[in-house]
Amino acid sequence: MRKFYKRKKTNKIKWIKIVLFFLVFYISFALIKNKTVITDSDELNINNEVAVETRKPVFEYGIQLDSFKIIKEVVLSGENISGIWANYNMFFLKDDILTKSLGVFDFVKNLKATNNYTVLLKGDTARYFIYELDKINYVVVDVCDRDNIDVYKGVKQVITKPMFSQAVITSSLSEACSEKNISQKLSQEISEIYAWTIDFFRIQEGDIFKVYYENNYVDSCGKEKYIGVGKILAAEFVHKNQSFYAFYFEQNGNYGEYFDENGMTLRKAFLKAPLNYYRISSRYSKNRKHPVTGQWKGHFGTDYAAPKGTPIMTTANGTIEIASFTKYNGYYVKVKHNSTYSTQYLHMSKIKSNIKKGVFVKQGDIIGYVGSTGLATGPHVCYRFWKNGVQVDPYKQKLPPGDPIEEKNKVKFLQYKDSLLLKLTQTQM
Ligand SMILES: [Zn+2]
Image (tube, rainbow, N blue to C red; front, side):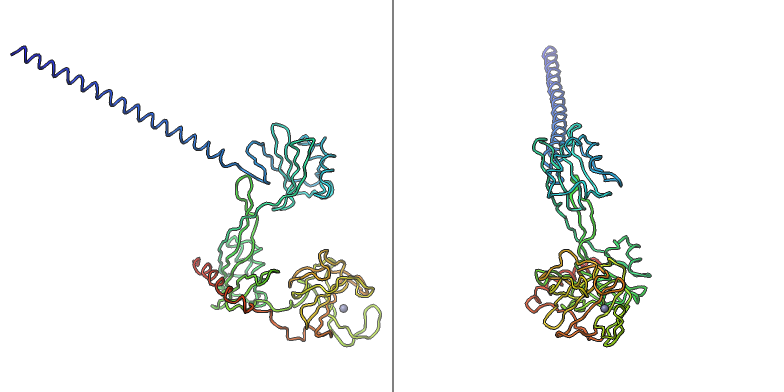
């Protein structure tokens, strides 16, 4: 019995030992297994990151940057292309590059201080030299194959993101903008949009403006770089508790403009003057003594005195009828606006290069520059206003408003306007 009991006891201990053994084995196994799992997942993560990086290469200027050493620099004042290329061991390639650059870009004549450039190197050897013409356009010099150098122009893709800002006027529009860190370019554009609607010298404390506009970015080393304000899509100016709206809409292929909530244009058909800053030196008159000839004769234009080179704008949309030179007019431009009105701009120092007969111009577009060519005593623009083939005094005309939304575009405009209005109201403080 005792023996049996003892045996039974030994059996029991044996079983406990077996159970313990398996327990320990199981726990250890589980631990090892767990650990393995953790290690695996860690490794997996690392692999993933590496994999993601290799799967998402960084591009700029259409070139994959990953394998290059990247140097970003700015052209210093007084620096020339030979000096820059010498810094990157490219000087001996100069003649070849300049030959290949012919017709693309003149690095010797047109290199500008403060412009950016990028050099992509493998080790110490330059493979690409990229010169930025502005924030969007650039020239690539590809010297990867030194026997086959390539020079070409490129354009960065502009990424546009809509943005809403609003500010309360305390003293002026431009101050309200600086207080809220809103670009001055935006403030300037708002005052242009509302030039005929709101007198910005009379705006008062408590007036509010809201603006829904585009911010522009370009890709730079895989990151978005802000390059400035784009178009204003919609604006609301609350003046003395009354809302003045402006919605940008493109009626036809030529250009877009701003309309109010009912589709009426915010501009008059004509600008008050063809210059932004000027002094009227002689008004339209049926009889005046000519300052050069001394003869008494009618002066059928308005003379605006301004420094030589001041930009001259077309006062209304239209088509260039004449862009030419005569002995008395000097360099001059005539714009036909419609079957009733034409305007003429005389004595320019030069006509803007793209202004030729048949070209469509938009109100405010620059057509030339103030000068004193032809019969003129000093730099000024003689502005002549034609109505039905006769020169009249623009200051005595009741000028027509600009065209409203065309009937065929009305439904489309009203729908678009509603979507913009929502952007202005949804984002209110
Ligand atoms: Zn004149």
